[in-house]
Length: 562
Image (cartoon, one colour):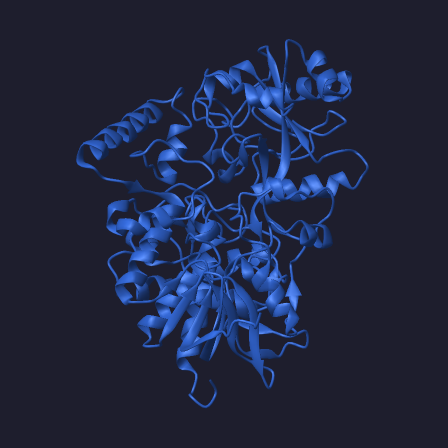
């Protein structure tokens, strides 16, 4: 049988990947007057962005200015430098900070679809550092009616968890809902969300929020701009001539296709979180592809394609980590608020605390892996809570006092006991050590000061704490039986290593020279955040900004350069 001849087409720009980075790059290129096509491996669009909380961290953006947030370029520059240090070149940090507000202004001025709201009070992750803001810099997409997408609504990559149809809530709503059993604000928010759900059902609205709202809004803007988006079109190879990238080979619905790129290719195909071979190659053990909530299609295609033509790689041993609980029926549960709420701790196999449980999720997992190398097991760790914690707070998607699903007990993920000694035996840690650890923590809780790890001293810690608990909203004794031990694994939102890029989003070789015609953004590239995390949305915010930067650089190329 003869090989099927590839269909050919040509565009100014070819974008690979339909997450926030790719859609922003394609939209910007179209607004700059370039012909552009976006190809996506999956049969759905949105990638990991659609499965995320949809937060966007961009200092000094128009939403923050409108809300009177006391930010400034100098303040943001000091803060990002404090968080990232020298791990990422200053020119790239500056490019993100300088172009972020421009990107937001440029795109929102050309489409009504990109509407955002401020997550007031959602602190930067390190507000105690110079330039940090306790009230936060994070924004999120406004809730949007999915009916606007028509049949395309069914094409959005599905989130790892979803509620009943008609229910949608913002990040701020989620914060308040966590206190449904503790504060009147939590109860009012629950009633507000419920009332809106009833109204949505009566009026036939299909509200989308969080990451689904962001990709829906970008999709609507792309559709209005006439940008072709080809789903079920995986990248197979970059095409080079004289060392420059001039297009891609792909498969569209199983048939080979060649897409020529007159100006260049933007890789925005995500990370490699679902590639076990790559995880074993770059990460410390133990590793698993079952602990990630990233898009299942993310196996490093774009990263490998760039590497094959000489691109440099960086940050390949890191990810957007977060302590998570395995789910026997599907993706893990990413623990965001639970670790800040009072009445629970994390311990290692020696029965000892080892970190500030309320710290940034990336930092907690870094500590898990670092301490695991000592020979004492920290991966997985054990989340210890009592019945009072269970009666007060949401946990694994269940409401306070609601029984934890039996599947977690059957799978051995959660153990339950009437005494701490019995619990220790069930999870294989020394009973005397666990008892002493809890006793010491209880003393800190009563005093309101964690002398070992300073939990609750940061505004970020306190954001998801319980405001009714004083003097420290993150500390309460663990004393009411029965007691629970929950296996905590190092989950992630995606990997953060990839192709090395410069301040123009150009992909670089090992010698620092750019590969002509090749750009990258999002988790396809090494993160501007380095090994840290500045605030909620510090994955998606830079992804959008560097997609925007790539498209503008391509638009500004002289034709003889392209």
